[in-house]
Length: 114
Image (cartoon, rainbow, N blue to C red; front, side, top):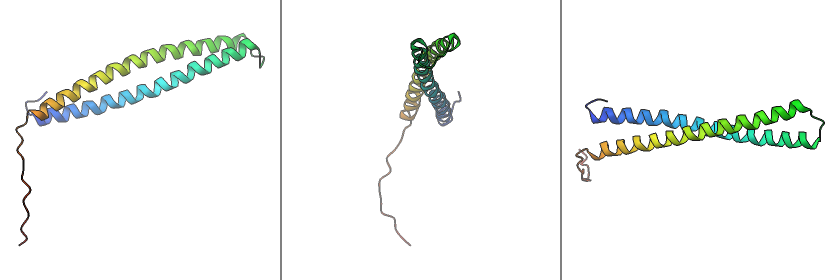
């Protein structure tokens, strides 16, 4: 980090933006994982009931889809939690830096037109 607090605040804000992009990507993968789990479970149920005559390959594929979705879901939920924690820490640091400034209140005075 730099010695100038305003530069550090800018760096922190850039980091928060990068982390927010990562969090959004994780949310998309989480949704896709849930869809994969649901789709795999539905395909497995259809295969077990023999509704459309799908064979063993469809059953194995649906099991793989469910397991892959579960692994992806767990991984992305974990990453999202870590990213949210990092965002909270960065926002706290940014607030602390902003709070350390010696700001003065500027009084509202009417402007004089010349």
